[in-house]
Amino acid sequence: MLGRTVITWVGLCLLLLLSACAPRAVRRGVPGGPEDVARVYLEAWTRNDLVAQHGMLVEAPADFDAQHARWRQALGVVASRFEGIDLESEDEVAAVVVFRAVHTLRGLGDWEVESRLRFERRGKRWVVRWTPEVFHPEARIGDSFGRLRAWGPRAALLDVTGAPLTVPGEVISIGVYPGRVRDGAAVAQALQTQLGLDPTRVQAVLRSGGAQPEQFLALIDVRPERYQQVRPVLAPVPGIFFRKKTARLTPAEGFAAHTLGRVGEVTAEALQALGHPYQAGDLVGLSGLERAQERTLAGSPSGEVRLVRRSGESVVLHRFDGAPGTPVRTTLRREVQAAAEAALLDVTQPSALVAVDTATGEVLAVASRPLGEALHRALTGRYPPGSTFKVVTAEALLASGLKPDTRVDCPVEAAAGRRRFRNFESEAFGASTLRQVFALSCNTAFIQLSARLNRSALEDAARRFGFGVRYDVGLPSPGATFPEPQDDADRAAASMGQGRVLATPLHMATVAAAVDTGRWHAPRLLADAEPGPEESLRAGTPEALRNLMRAVVMEGTAKSAAGIQGLMGKTGTAEFGTLVPPETHAWFIGLRGGIGFAVFVEGGGVGGRVAVPLATRFLQELDATQSSGR
Image (cartoon, rainbow, N blue to C red; front, side, top):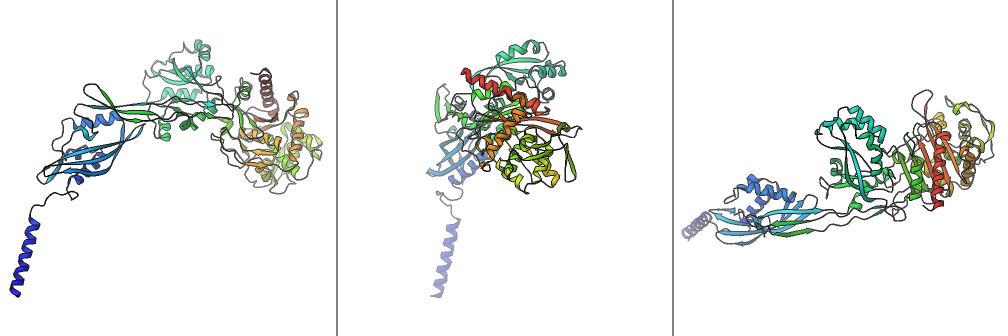
C-alpha cells in the first residue's frame, strides 16, 4: 500500500508539473491580456509618449506622430484621460477593447468619446492594430478634425436704474511702431502733452525687448472726437500711428474710467489668473469692474468638434453649449457721476472725487485722475485725512459730554508728550467755542480737548466711522486704519488725522455720509450685493456734528462755498513727506441732500483753497443737471 501511495503522489506531482508547463489559454482579465495592454497604451497616450505607443502597434502608419500632432493642434487638446476600459470581444487571434476618453479642449472644456482599440495576437503578445477610429469611432483614414469656438455678446455694466453704461462702439488706438521712431523723447513728450500718458511708460514700451520694429504697440484708446483733436499734433511725430477698432464705450470719454475698467486682448497674467475657459486671443476685462465681473459679463463660449471627411463633408461630433453674459447693475447714478467728472475736468494734479448715498453706503459716483494712470486713487490710494478726521474726533468729544458751545482755547502751539504742535500758518483764535475751533480747524484746540478723553474714546469713535472695519466694495479698496496710539504725541497727531491714520477718498466720503443718518454704512458698488458692515454713532452726536459742519461752510474754512444751499462739510490740509515746510494734500468732505462726498487733491495744498472750489463745482453741476432733467 505504501509503495502504491508513493507512486500515486509522484504521478500527481508530475501531472501538475506538466500542466504548469503547458501553453495557457489567453483569457479575459489575465495579465498580458488585451485589457492590460490597452491600459498601458492609454497611459502612454495620457503622457503623449508616442515612442511607447509605437512599441505596442502591429504596424504604425508612416504619419502616426503627425496624425496625433494634427489631432491635438486642431482640437486644442491640452490633456486626456481614459476610463471604463473593458473587453468587448476576444477570440484566439483578435480582440476589441472599448474605453471612454475624456479630452480637455483648450477654451471649451471636456469632450467625452466612447472609442475602441483593436488587437491582434502575435505569438504570446497582444498588439494594437491602430486605425483613426481610436480618436473617434466615425473617423476613417484621410479624415481630419477641426473645431469652432465663439463667445456670445458681452453683457453690459448698468447704472443703478438698469440703463447700460457700456455699449459697443468705435475707438482709435494710438500707439507706436518702434522701428519708425526717430526720437523716443519727442514721442513721449507729445503723448504726455496731448493725452496725459506717463513718459516713463511710453519709454518702457519703446525699449521692450520683445517688440518687433514693425509691430504696432498700442498705448491708449480714444474716441473719434478726441482723436480729431489730437491728430494734428501727434500725426507728424515719426513713429506715432493710429488704428480703428471696436470697443466698449461709456457715456462720455473718461466716464468712471477706472471704476468701469476696460476690455482688451487677454494678457499672459490675466490668462493665468482666469484659467478655463480662456485662451490666448480672447477679449476680456483688464481692469475695473470689467475685470472683477469678467465671469459674469462674458458668460462662457460655445463650440463644436467636427470631423471633416476627405470629400469635404463636415460632421459635428460634439457641441459645447455656451452661456450668454449676464449684465451687472452698479450703484452709479449717471448725473452724479457726470458732475464728478465735470468737477475734475481741468485738474492736472492727481485727484479723486467720491459720492455715496448716506442712507445705504451705495457709491453714486467715483472719479480718479489722471485718466492715463492705472492707480484707482479714489478707491485704493490711502492718505492721511488731515483735519477731515476732526469729524471723528468731534464725535468722540460730543459723546463724552461736550457741547458745540463748550468754551475752549486755540493757542498758536500746544504740547503733547515730547512733541509740540502748531496750527496751520501759525494761526491762533484765542478763547473760542468747540463750534468755532471746528469751523476754523484749530489743531491746538483739538489736541488739548482729545487729551481729556478716556484712553479708548478716540479709537472707539474711529471704529464707529468704519476705521479698521473690513468691507467689500466690489473692487479692491483697503478702507481706513486707525492704529492704536503709542504715546501722547501719537494720540495728538491722530486726533487731527495725521500720524499713522490713513484713509481712502472713498472711505472719507462714508465718514461725511454717516453724519447725515447717524449710522456708518460700508460702501458698495454693486447694486445687488449684500449690504456690508454698519456702525451707529453715539446718540445725540449726529445733529451736533451737522451743526459743526454747517459752521465750516458758513463761517469757517469752507466759507467760499457758503452760497451752496444746505452744504455741510469739513476741510483738511494733510501734511506728508519730509520737506520743511511739509507738502500737503487738499481735502474736503461734504454732505448735502442725502449725498456724502469727498474731494481729494494729492499734493494739492490747502483744502479750503483747492478742494472746496472743486466741491462747489461738483454740486453746481449736479444742480444744473437735475434742474434741466438731463
